[in-house]
Length: 349
Ligand code: TK8
Image (cartoon, rainbow, N blue to C red; front, side, top):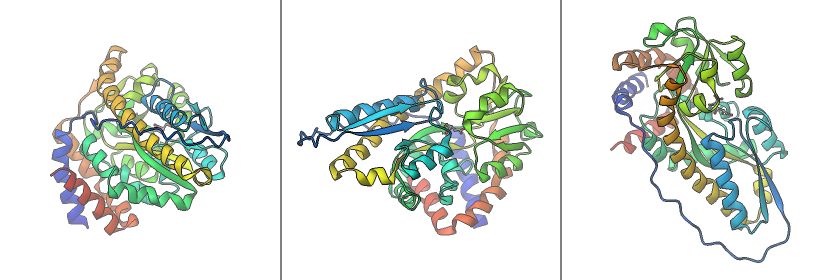
């Protein structure tokens, strides 16, 4: 296990360095609308996220709503909520389990508190590019993880994209491994993120996304880590001075639906919401990649110091987090971990 993981990680590090974003160019498909007889009953889908209405994640949610309402002739109505109006990721997932909310789209990190195998998607430096992530997540391996959600009263319909995460802080530019020393960084509520940032020398503290801006504003934390689109659109440049291009984790979003609600739908409507989540996800991924690539310039214009991480320093970070990765790889199980790594290698051939 140790040899394979180290070998793979160092090997893929070279790919991480060569990684470049790319728009997912899979064309959106326009399923023919089945003019089936309306049952007359209207069911409402309450769809909530933590990011604000400017973020590509919300644009994706609006696209989902359009497709579903059109293809069900209004038999399904989607109410969209943003900025944590319905709660934080964990509380919205619990609401889906209870049936008091129908859709949310969290990052994989908080999902790992419900299905621990999802931790693997937050292994630092796991995915070398957006394209490889798409191929693995949208393939058999990704579906295998979505199937694990059923036991948690959740239905995983599709993977969307949060993106490559970068570190911001208000203390110093992060250019070397040593620059992490002692920084109090907010992390998502995920044990691997805590262990990984401790291994980098930081002082991580888990926190719901909805509390993050205030914590930075009040100096409770020195910094946080998120993709550029979130850093810019949530206005973190108002309370953070430095952003470093660490790209330390590629974060998938998972489009979740309450299983009690999904099971209450007709087979036709189940297929419509599944297809809509996939089609809206392809739209969201494209918007998200454009935003993550573009907004780094906006952050500089807003006064942030943007720092690149050298090949040598990123390699040192990869090595520093290896023990944390191995600890969780043991917990997840060698077979499943190897399946993911082999799918990533196959996607690069
Ligand atoms: C938004 C979160 C956010 C995530 C985080 O609800 O918690 O930092 O990256 O996108 O899911």
